[in-house]
Length: 438
Image (cartoon, rainbow, N blue to C red):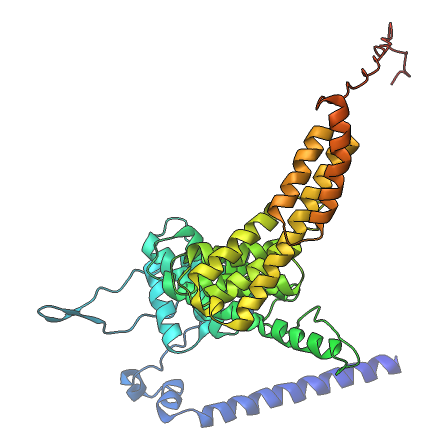
């Protein structure tokens, strides 16, 4: 009983305190209000003519808030461009004329906002809008080209060179006659040339390692710089150089792109690919300042790509023709004693390789029982390669074969008939073996 009385007493005391605080709080609020509000609350007739306080409106959450981003409808929606300028004018023959503002949500509105952001050097935001305009399925070709080019420009100005180079190439693949072609090709070449700086440094390190100026050689395997590809930087540079050549075959950058690509292939020992690049310079850009050097390297690559006299000799024949063309068409090669000596040494190597191949062919005829064909082939070796060691060898073989041919009257001995092969027995099963039931 005593505990219940104490509990009721405590509850009543708390109620009194709370009511007192509430009354004091209302008095303080009444005294802190303006005079017009206090008069209206006290029943003052003058307060009825006073202006009522403005009502507060609930503000909408700002655009791009966290909750808006979580909305599934906004995840894949195009970003909202900034508002267009209030006054927009264009120059007409009769003076300035007001330009109609684009409708909100259209491709023109996105491009207008992207242009404004690009002028303000906000490349990351402008790139998103240009990307949306470039991927508009119903957009006009002019808008798509502008979106692709300036998306690549925004990526390049942010230093994201791999994506920028791919976007330039995407533009050139979709619109071969785009007005942005020259700029796109130039930027692609500059990016590829920038990526090849590491290859040039690697070449220099390799030369120092071979000359014992450095104790070790460490090739670059990966990059963590956003301006470079993570893997295969050299291969990506050659890829972009090929795209520059394909999109600007007759332009000023085509021969440089081929020469750089061929140099990289030659450094890596890909002789056939290097020969292809250097030979294209001689065939399609004979008046280029890089053509004489390209001819020298093409001759070397052809000689190294044959694999020896045992393999196909067409590359050696092409190298011989290229040496003759170099001596006739490029005075800077024929008049320079060192260059001429180099070409003559290459020609001697080609002669030796072709002589070896023809001599081995004559030996093959002799070994397979064709003395007449072998005698004729040895005679060809004597006529074509008079200043080689194979002249004496061919003369010796011809003397040996002449005695055999005189005995037979020049008629080759009959070859023994080939043994008849027994027909292969065909075993056809009468029926398939029974298998397990499923």
